Image (cartoon, rainbow, N blue to C red; front, side, top):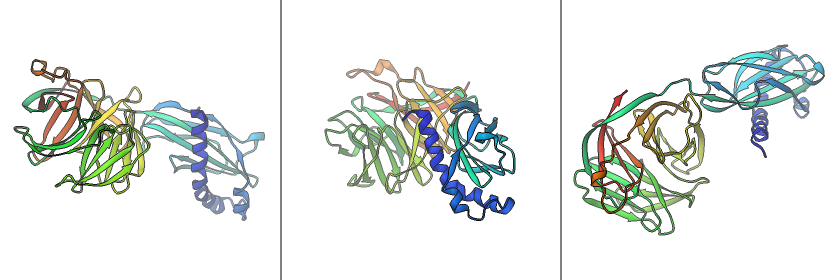
Amino acid sequence: MGLKSCNIFICFILLGILISSCNTDNNKNNNLNADTNAVVSNTFQINISKPQNLTSFILGDKIDVEADIPGGLKPDSVCVFLNGKKQVTEKSSLKFTVPSDSAKAGNNSFLINAWSKGKQYTGGVSVVLRSNIIPQQYTFKIVKSYPHDANSYCQGLIYENGCMYEGTGQYGESMLMKYKLQNHELVQSYNLPEDVFGEGIVISNNLIYELTWKSHVAYEYEKETFKLINKFDFGTEGWGITNLGKNLVMSDGSYTLYVLSPESFNEIERIEVYNNIGPVNMLNELELIDGKIYANIYLTDNIVIIDPSNGCVVGKINLTGLLDKTKVKDREAEVLNGIAWDEKGKRLFLTGKYWPEIYEVQLVKK
């Protein structure tokens, strides 16, 4: 199924849920047909001329919506929905202007439900909303550096009470570790099976969750003992993961973040990440800092700051030059990958794959 067809198909599925809301308005205002159940079972296609499917707008734009009923019929009642929320109820017009202030970045669905002469006409279309914010640009200042195992292919990093929790990757080398920040003294560790590639980690309710890359499995451990207590299946690649309120949020290398239940790993919703130009791909390691999601962009020296309420990128950090390459010895250090936040001390820690140091940094506005 093509993308356009898929979007329209989804719109019709959602529309079925919304029909009852529109029926209430019809019965109140128009008294069209007492036997609404009979009418609902017999729906017809409505023609939508504006907006075209997947037209791009900026979040906050006022979007013109125009449609017509085949045969030139006049509507007796019309409902327009944006992402399932009713925006407009009219008696006889199929031309509207709908504000997008309450929408989100990425794909948003318009659904139209019209009634004419006892028949129901439905249609749907999707639009893409880019962020209306020009991201604040940041550079950095190194405050202090700490030792890091240059043989650790860092995939996830968490700070807590003077210690770092780290998840590492590579087949046959993936593990979960806890060590002291000051001297990298190992406190405890757990080796993953040799046939899985470890990815991001997160602590939630005294549990640790660790993703795998292509195995579609997440591991759940007791935080204090590293005892493996559960496994969860999920349907995409696992890259980075962090907390988002009472839920978790995971990346898979695309511009989409997946909000998950920590009890089941079931998907609750998705966040599409956009800046003022378009989607931001290759989202990797994640960390929640003061209500915003910090995500490093894989294969770059950049971290983006994301507003999880709408998916907009509000900041961008350029970390070019952070790694002291004079200290790289045996293994060639790779890209930035590892973001940890000390909530009490308001300290930001960064490292990378095979990096010999962890850096405490302060952000500097450009």
